[in-house]
Length: 106
Length: 236
Image (cartoon, rainbow over all chains, first blue to last red):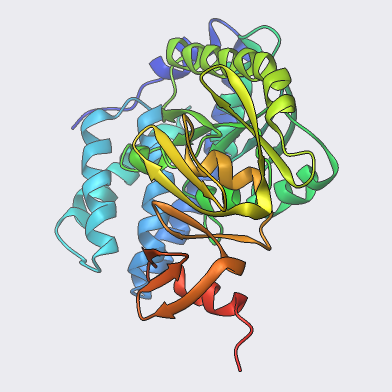
């Protein structure tokens, strides 16, 4: 499975370490809450709300350079809108775990 | 250019803010995590440009645009490319950026916004001449500005790149759009009843299910316009 990286962030910062630090901090603080909301909505079968959560998380996935994972998340977002709790859920949650682990070690 | 950022995601706002620092003459004056706060701000303040996220809970970017009477230039920011076609519906939208936004693409969007500003400035004088000063509207036909008495207009029809303006005395073919002329007309007299027709509601002869008779012209009424048309009538 592909691994997160900071290449987008460094291209954006152009060496501005303060900005890099700030953005990592924002992602670290925002990501767990968004993922928690997703899990709650899945648990309560609020699939439309869960798709909105996936939409937001998708941006973080792209920032961390996870292109294939982004495609999976996009498909999963659509299937949730159609109220389908399908096999992509497992794939998506694996991606979330990879990001969680990565952010913990940043 | 003074700009604001509207995005419910903190990460997205931080990134756009950073991108703005890379462009000269671009000043972020405020950031908002929801559109309602931004509407309140825009009621009191003017800005040149808005970076607007489409996909926000409760109140989407498109809902937000519809609340603005004279919106500034808007650059849409989104994780979905599927809304691009909808964006063409709005004259104020100058570009559409798909996240994650890269600097070269961002710079291009700003250039577009700046070139729209320059065009708008050069058009200001022309617009002033053409603007209705009361009951008059000046239209440009064959390089002549011709005065039309607004209440005498009973029908305007879209014809490709032109509009046909029908008045009591004469008809005029003008190089313009229904949208542009609609902005110049008093809303109490005129109503767009179909994507190709604006009528003067005081000139209606009769109404039948999905059409209206104006003078001798039978004009279709779209389903979405019918409630507003019925509201305008003094029904017994």
